[in-house]
Structures are given as structure tokens and as C-alpha cells.
Image (tube, rainbow, N blue to C red; front, side, top):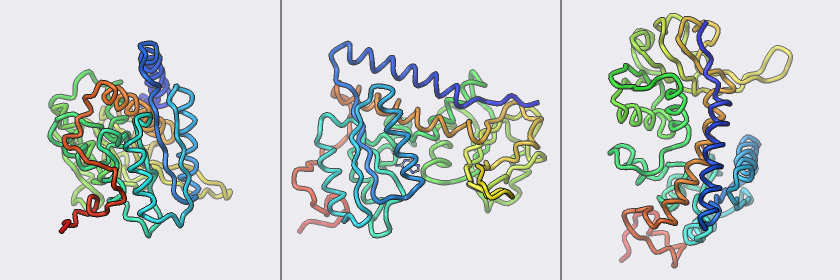
Length: 312
Ligand code: GUN
């Protein structure tokens, strides 16, 4: 039987470390880390995620600033809010929950967040830092995947990692993190030819395609380690719903270790968000957040700043 990697237990331990760091910071006279969470509209899944983030913040001693805006909020008003949060020294992390309503340009909004406060790690500056191995804030789910792998392996050097999925939020950053750890990385996706054969070579499979039960038992070499990032909600025969991963869990028991869905990667994401917020707070208080460039947000909304339009 494959070892089940208990994401809830690993996340709990990370939370304890995060809380200890916050307690030490506060004892040293630093402020409590502050996290602003912005939700536009009332998408039910987003409401649940945001609720969990706020609850976890409170549990760990992070001050949360909740901004729930109506679905009709204009893009300029949202940008103006972000500008205020960027300038607010009590706010160390800013999270704008996606998806945003269709009339708002998500990329534009995410790029408006100061890179030093971008605790999601979505800003191109943080993406660039990750791909050049120069620090920055790492996206939460990929960071969580790495921490789960660290419970199985001391060292990833030379291991063959196959990533299934090429999203900006999961697949691509995971590939970068694995490269940083000296693994040999193959990035694949749902259109990749011979995907099963490629996966069968892997020491580690990271499935993040959002394709329920894509990875079958015969795709997995005995002793491989599987991280299942997929979460698809599926209707069951009795009219209820259940979460299904990208891996056919019952067929991969010849693996060395596998993450369950739920209870694997999911709990890590939120705990890594908390850890990122503490990192951001520490760096900002120490004055070494190093955005690399200075933007004055005083005159916002100045759309040219965000759109790249020339000011002439
Ligand atoms: N929506 C679903 N997951 C996430 C996440 O990790 N961050 C943000 N900002 N929005 C999300």
C-alpha cells in the first residue's frame, strides 16, 4: 500500500511554526502581520475560500482586513482600493480573490498589487524572481507541493519529475521550484502526446491538469511519489457531490506515496498563504522587501501606470 501523505498534518505543523514566528515578531516589538483579502461579488466557492483564509489568519495572529465589494464594482474603484492597501503600512499582504467579474481585467488588477505585498506570488515581478532563482514570494499551492515532497525526500537532486499542467498558478511555478531543487523536470499537459509513457518514467508525478482521475495506475512506476493537485467537484449517484483529484487513487497503491483528495495539497495552500504573509511582513518591517522599483500610488487611479499606456 502506498503511504498516504497527510496534508492536514503537514499544514498543521506549518501553522504552528508560523504562529511561533508571529509570536516572536510581536514579542520583539514588531506589528502583527496584516492581510487584506478582497472579494468582488459573491461567487459561492470564493466565499468559502475567503472565509477560510480569514478564519486561519485570526487563529494564527494575523490581522485581517476584509473588503467585500459588490459585483458591479468598477475596475477603477478596485484599483483605487489596491492603491490604498499598497500604501497602508498595517497591510503586509494583499490577496484579491479570483475569479473576478468579467468586466474587470484580472491581469491588470493583479499587476497593481505591490510585489512585496503580493502574497499569492502572482505578480510578474515575483514570477520573474522565481524563474531566475532570485527570491520573491512563491505561489502558495506550488510552495505547499514542495513542502509535501520534503516530507518524503531529503533531496530531489537528479530525480525525474513530471508535471502535468501548465497553468501560471500551479504547473509553471512548480516546474521552476523543482528545477531550483536540481530535479530533472518534464512539463506536460493534457495535449501532450504519449503522456502515460512519459509519466511511467517519473520518480515524482505532480498532477495539476484539473482533469479528474486522469492519471491511471499503469501510468505510475512502482515506488513513484504522486502529488495530486486536482480538485474537481463531481455529482454522486445519491445527488451529493464529492471532490475528485487528477489521480485514480485506488489504482496507484504500488506508488511509494500519494496525496489524497481532499486532505492532501488543499490544506497546504492556505497555510502557505499565512507563511507568505509573515515573510512579507518581516521583509517589509526590515525594509528589505525590495520591489526593485518604486511606484507612487498617490495619484491612483492613474490607469497608465497599470496598462502600460504612454503618458504623453
Ligand atoms: N481563487 C482560487 N484560489 C485562489 C488563490 O490561491 N488565490 C487567489 N487570489 N484567488 C484564488
